[in-house]
Length: 91
Image (cartoon, rainbow, N blue to C red; front, side):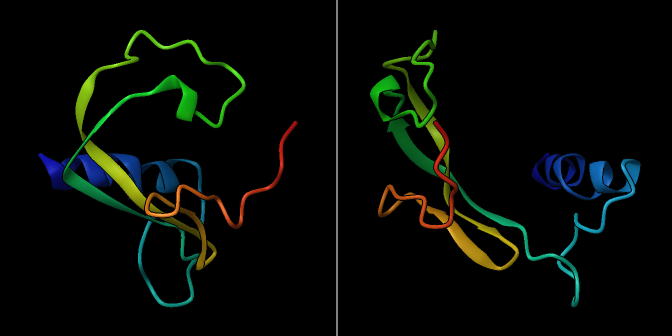
């Protein structure tokens, strides 16, 4: 179920590794992913930010997409702009 997936990807790993995050409590790190489970898109390896363009899923029509990512309360990714404003440049 979606609630179980969220727990397994957020609060449970944080507890296992004794990390501060994993919840939306006041004073905790605001590391948040906004995900649209209904959004559909086609996987295009040319859109990957990774240097590796290998994927057996290239051209697949898939459902479920990360729309925004915040780290420490700051926007680091937005699907709407296809930009990573807070990301570090990796070469």
